[in-house]
Length: 415
Image (cartoon, rainbow, N blue to C red; front, top):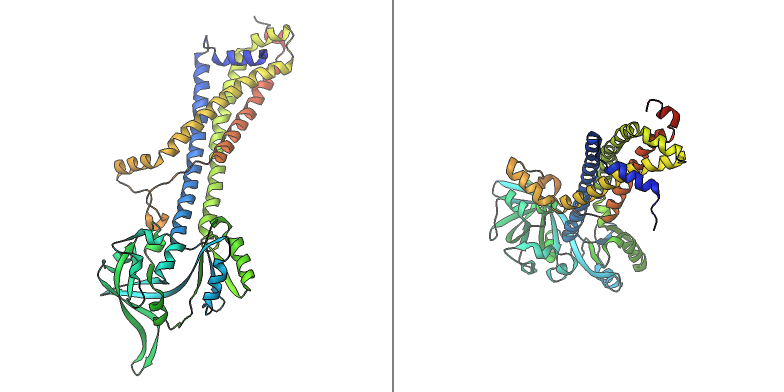
């Protein structure tokens, strides 16, 4: 296939090093600057994607995909709701639960906690938290055992280990001549769990469902029914349809709603970082303008000769557009490969920097994780490359237009 001469000349001008070593150096610098900007943008977006992906995984390991709760905070007829929910093909499991506020005390230490009453045999089918229990098993939460499983950060705050005991204080009690006396019960610590989410590891405790109901005087009622779905992303739609099918009268929620602030903040941050770093890519892309302006100035005699041989202004415009586009294409592709490589090894890079500086970049108490995750999504790479190349193509228009306006007689006047 015959290659247009504009492409041939544009490529030759770019690769030629005779008498223009400085210009070739500037072209390389422009390409490397563009590559670095593209790589940084890809790495940042990949880290944001990895953070969102890891956060979603860890949230779903400790919480249900959706819940059906009573409008007044309790659900007396939960067995009927559970039976109808399990008949839905979109539901993998439906289990009852109780969630209440409590205070745990060990000696002089105390901590507020969210106490979750569960049925061990059913709970392991709804969430994967049972897989994160160490030193024990969720099966130890048998009715009447008054065993409790604590998050490892909560246990550290209380200064208790497996085999120890804590006193649970419930905000229910009785009035005595000495005043109000809260309900208290001693629980044996039968296990610890580590979910990787500091929010849960520091404030969640698991206890037998029946024991929790007895302490909080709920009788046979529960807080609600937790649902595990085949498609977690469809939770908002499925739980609402299911509530209407059962007959209504439920307060419905799902994991995208209870943790909406997390994912909304990630999306806002990702968008802002993209817009800010695109400016860095734009600065690198417009360095091509300076390079091409100098090339046009040097090639004025050659342009004049081309015009006298019959080349039209649009042909000259195409020659220098091809040259700038090749620089942009090389920089964009190099940056994409560099960004993909760095994103794939970001954990090792961050670990090496932390060892060298002695600083910890991620505090689990703030970011819910101690390792920096990264996940490259190809649509982000395509978007970054398309924006970078478009900026490069835009940057070539002015110098290419200046070259197209070159008048042969004026250019050759002193030659």
